[in-house]
Image (cartoon, rainbow, N blue to C red):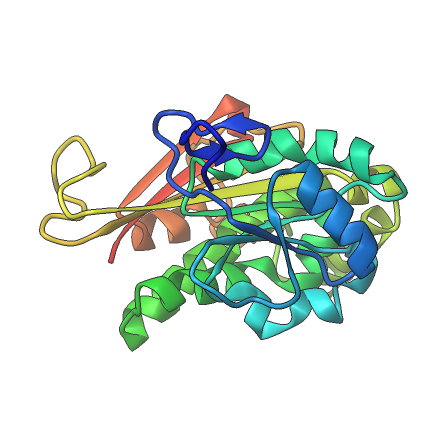
Length: 275
């Protein structure tokens, strides 16, 4: 988008240095056409009726429709590059103020997700992320399966162990499985826990950019960097003391990813994949 001065803009003001994705339109299946138009104008975007056109789109996902419109495959393919669940029950002006910093954050990534725990859990977010990534950079069969598994484990960690605070299974038994399933259902039913956010920011860099310090990752290949943030209590990574328990699957994730970093007291995980 370009303003009257000829300067590129993004939601909330002029486009800042390092902006990777400049959104041209807003898509919101759960909003009326009139409300969408007012919201899009407040954010200096075009109102999009469907995911089409050359400009990147941001889509607002209504949590109450996570099994319907939000799960539509087309919403996870180009040109959609950001998936944001807005706060409910606000007017267009208030909603625009809430969304503007999120869209500015999204502009720093190639793909961006900001959803509540309840919606992300219902959507099986790991698989949706894999679809969005592979639509932009096709992956071979085995590599696709590996990346999907790592994304699923990392997202599940953030949702289940992080935001919901459900302890992993201490042993592989029917009793522990029943306890784990009961805890998961109980905590998803808690409105405060279900409303906690998960944020995923994904960047794809040319070969040779953003590689591991030893240069082992991404040499001669593009590199995908995925950051996953949760709002849980965090954790301190250490050696696994019970290999039979479900835990957080960090060994599995580390064996697949070309880079793994844990920050912010365990509330932020950064994965790198050579594509």
